[in-house]
Image (cartoon, rainbow, N blue to C red):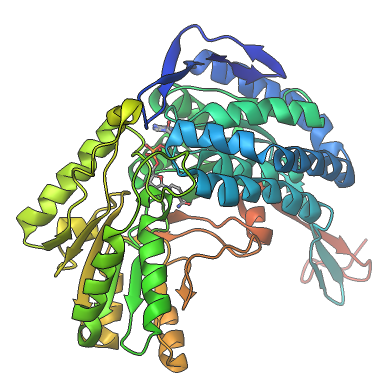
Amino acid sequence: MRIDHLINGEHVPGRDYFETVNPATQEVLAEVARGGAAEVDAAVAAAKAAFPAWSKRPAAERAAILHKLGDAIARTVPAIAKTETEDTGQPIAQTGKQLVPRSADNFHYFAEMCVRTDGHTYPTPTHLNYTLYHPVGVCALIAPWNVPFMTATWKIAPALAFGNTAVLKMSELSPLTAARLGRMALDAGVPPGVLNIVHGYGAEAGEPLCRHPDVRAISFTGSTATGNRIVHAAGLKKFSMELGGKSPFIVFDDADPKRALDAAVFMIFSNNGERCTAGSRILVQKTIYAEFTAKFAERARRIGVGDPLDENTIIGPMISPSHLAKVRRYIELGVAEGATRLVDGTEPPPLAGALARGNFVGPTVFADVDNRMGIAQDEIFVPVACLIPFTDEADAIAKANDISYGLSSYVWSENIGRAHRVAAAVEAGMCFVNSQNVRDLRQPFGGTKASGTGREGGTWSYEVFLEPKNVCVSLGSHHIPHWGAPP
Ligand code: NAD
């Protein structure tokens, strides 16, 4: 199979191609067009040309098209989920039941929002100020490999709903489902040029896209290192930067022990641990540390590792051999740093047939982790749990915040005052209290510190995808003070 660029509604062949492989088997799934500055220029030109007509379409018409696209995704969930699982190694139970259905919701949600976008009024005795929201223009949308279809739709839906046009660049490691989405968008009635897709590597396609002077806004999801590079290269543009995380999962001794344990296991091992909001630093109060840690390790040992197309699999293969090597390096680092390795996922039980060639690693659990260790400070983005003891509330907050990242956080306590105090004190864009990560599309999604800038979701998506304009109207009765009488 060959995957081409989508530029101005046409499938544009690559001048060169690269392979995308199934991380469970190393089987080549497709040859993908390898774009560069020339394809980016063509795609941005198409998006720029399509902008005036698309932005002037009544919001209700744009909404109708996006609802149609959402419906088409909802009807195609099993096929998209299978491709996503083959391309990323994310277990089918996640792609089929959570991630792809959520992608359809993204279109329905922003289709509803764009017909309700209103402004503010600021009346004074002499003037009436009011705000208008205008689309920004051409948006660069850049996605990582971990949940590519969901992330692509999370960006495309608001960008297009609010009247922008877009150039999407997926990760070179997982481009397949977005390529299909491009075709589905055309079928749903998205006009040529409104959504363009350029495939390729970050340095070759992503960077020229971000530098392009006709790109007005960049919605980027990926690593902190790349986010920093983009901000430097892109110059003055609107940014939404959804970057890395190493989120604290804080369990006090007055937490509901069973629910906290369930959520702790879920938040580090779901999505293969390749999850930006993973609760990868599990801070547990000393009074319950030994018991919690033992139970956590026991649960981790029972997690099924294997074929991601099997409904019972919890952990599928890591996205690439180099990511697998990174996991193994960090597992060795944890041992070298003196943490206690309770569960070692380095060599999971061998799998049969083609799966023997997959990038598999099992869940790994480190106890007695010091928050300053490399395994606790670095985003490893894998199923490696670090269990860190703390003494009291102040110690929990200090340890939670002693990190460069600030994406998500989790607080477990049945003491309502404490739960609110810690939720307020933790440095993060999001805090879930007595809950795993449960998304509401209205909530501001994003992080602080090295986890990024800007928020998306609900009206927060205005920040990147809309320009507010203030209109100030004289009511006719004033004159400019101290400049003499009006003529
Ligand atoms: P990455 O930064 O390596 O790549 C992300 C995307 O950027 C890819 O499409 C890549 O090709 C592109 N890219 C690379 N270099 C570029 C450049 N110089 N200019 C423009 N584009 C460039 O990240 P990844 O390894 O694909 O994804 C994992 C990271 O994503 C983790 O750090 C994870 O936390 C983060 N992530 C964050 C969120 C969030 O919402 N905060 C969600 C998912 C993943």
